[in-house]
Length: 307
Image (cartoon, rainbow, N blue to C red):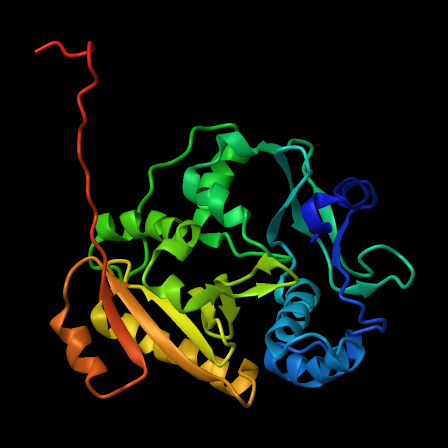
């Protein structure tokens, strides 16, 4: 929302705005409704006409991010933006969309920026990784309590699972880290043999990929480009919840973003075997179920034992 790597952050703070620029050179006011699918339906073809080298997914991301900044963010929402030097500006949306042709990031929202910044080093590991997501914006609502504490200069609160669908908070916490580990070590996994995490212009955009029913964990594409793969971690949630969730994500890709030659498949990953998931997946042939294993060991260091 302040340019790649916060390149325009200083100007945004000085002039009091956030914005985006995906070369859609027109005022969007008349086309901003509460349903981003209507916006995408109109502007994806426009974007692709001007950028024929882009995929439908790339066009969907560009239009979706534009809608999010122009309409999805609400007055009173809190936004954070990197300053390019290891800290984040924090501000509050104070008004509606406006268009400034010829300016940097011409599709804008007014922002009242706070006087103090947040040091990235003070953030918890999960929040750091979330704010490191590739893309114009990412939703960090689940870290609202931590951000509030950081703005107020307090210590980070303990990590808890407030999602009512979470049955096992300990597994939920573990799998927040597993997603990042999976992405970082993708090439070494079984899935990495056939699929790559989805990229646009050389940048990974497949982690926490936004859909109209929420962000999916990982979006990948087969090396021949003929399959899209949705990877969803169970995260300690109820079995029916995670099965329904991945089906909704897959349906979104089928309806909105998959190219005519592409099929969509899914993978659910969990810590333990789950009979309910296996039973549910018996009725479908395009979703697989994987278990992961965690190994933990203590290795004594020579000369440092006192027993």
